[in-house]
Length: 335
Ligand code: FA5
Picture (cartoon, rainbow, N blue to C red):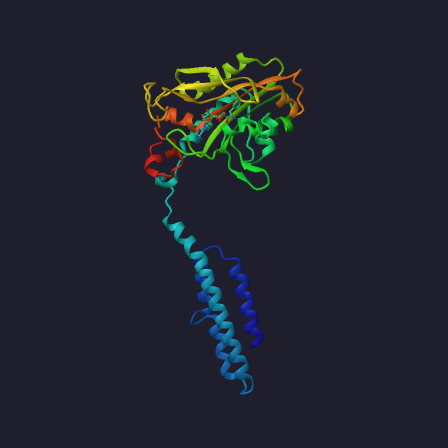
C-alpha cells in the first residue's frame, strides 16, 4: 500500500506538469481524488492492514492526500485565470486605447527633428546626464574660473561631477569616440540650478547638433537650421540671428524666434521683448577640435544647441514651460 501511495503521488505530479488547460486539471482531479477515484480505492485497503501497520500507513495516506490537495489547488489557480481569459477575450471587439497614454509633446517634436536629420545623414546619439567637469566645461574651452561657467547655474554632486547643464558635453564625447568626419544630433535632458518662470525650468530638454567635415561653413549651418525649423513648424516663422558668445564656438550666434504666444507683442514667456532665445549656434572652436584629437587645419564644422522644450512651447503655443513636466493629465491629454 505504501508503494501504491507513493507511485500514485509521482504519477499525479508528472501529469499535472503536462496540463494545458483548466479542464484537464478538473478531469485529473476527478480521476485521482474523486469519490470513486484512485486514491479512494487505495484507501479502502486500510481496513485490511495489520494493527501494527495501520498507524504508520494511515499517517502516510493522510500526508499524501494533503499534498495532493495542495498540488491540485495550485494547478487550479494557475489555470483558472487563463481559462477565463480565453472565454472573455473577444478579438473582434475594437481596441480600448483610452488609458494607454501618449508621447509628451516634447518627445513628439524631438522625433520630428530626428526624422528630418536622419534624412540628412545625421545619427541620433544619447549620453550621460551625470557628467564630469571636464566634458561639461573644461574640454569645451571653459576652464575653471572662466566667467562663462556663471551663465549656466550648476547642480554639483560629489567628486567634481555635475548634472550636465547642456547637451554640448556630447560634442567632446562623440568626437573623441568617432573622430572626423562626423554628423550627429544629441537630444536629452539637462539641468540648471535656477529659479523657474514661464520660460525657464530647472530640468528641460535640449537637442544638440554637430557636423564636422572638410570645408564646412556658416552657409551650411544656416541651411541646416532652416531645415530644422521647417520640419517642426511646416510653415515660415520669424527668426533673427545675432552675435552670441560661447567659448566653444567662433563665431557664435544666438538664434531667437519671434514669440508665437503673443505674436511678438510681448508676454510673460518672452519677458515682454517679443523674442525668445531658442537655438544658439556657431562654428566649432579649433580648441574643441584639438581637445578631441581632430586636426582643425583639416576639418571645420558647426554646432547648435536647440532649446527643445522651448521649441515645443512655440509649436503648441504653451504659455508656461512648467506645464510640460508637471504630469498634469488635464494638460497632457490635450496632445
Ligand atoms: C547652451 O546651453 C549651449 N550649450 C548651446 C550651444 C550649443 C551654443 C552649441 C553653441 C553651440 P544656452 O545656455 O543659451 O546655451 O541654452 C541653449 C538653449 O536652451 C536656450 O536658447 C534656451 O532655448 C534653452 N534654455 C536655456 N536655459 C533654459 C531653461 N532654464 N529652461 C528652458 N530652456 C532653457
